[in-house]
Length: 209
Image 1 (cartoon, helix red, strand yellow):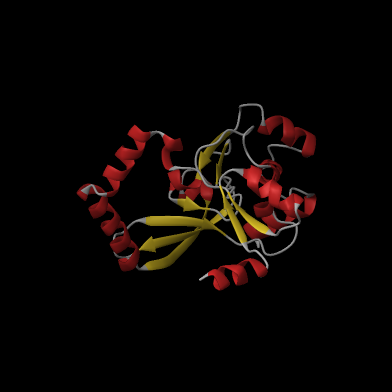
Image 2 (cartoon, one colour; image 1 turned 120 degrees about the vertical axis):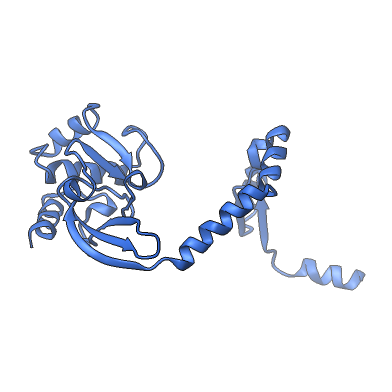
């Protein structure tokens, strides 16, 4: 046993540090490779809230709901049925932009998402140039809503505006409709936060051609 322990410490260390970064920095100072895992206890360590979460995990209603969700995914029969502009397909107003993720203010958006907003505002003709796009985006006159509130999905930044053509997909099993934008391809694209004139031209090309 003693010999095996000695052998262990003669080998290069492979360290995973969980939680407190102080140990991670100490290892870095000693040139010891390590993986820092940003871990926190659930509910921020609030014991009463942790108990409620554990109770939910064992709640029959939650278990049944999860099973139903998996069943609906597995039984879905998606069929591409149409292509329509977002204002027609989902009633999207020109002053409303859809985005990926949960509800968020413009100020709190990541820089790539803000860039895609600028691209959409120029594409829709609401801003003539970058400066006007910057001002309008933060003015409070644009309404930002998650894609999933409109049964839609968008890649990366997820920005969808009124004129963008949407792929309309019907689930034959349950009759519900979902919507997605067309892939812009590679390069200077809005889904990665680009908002150059080339980005806007490509969005127009997808719409019209």
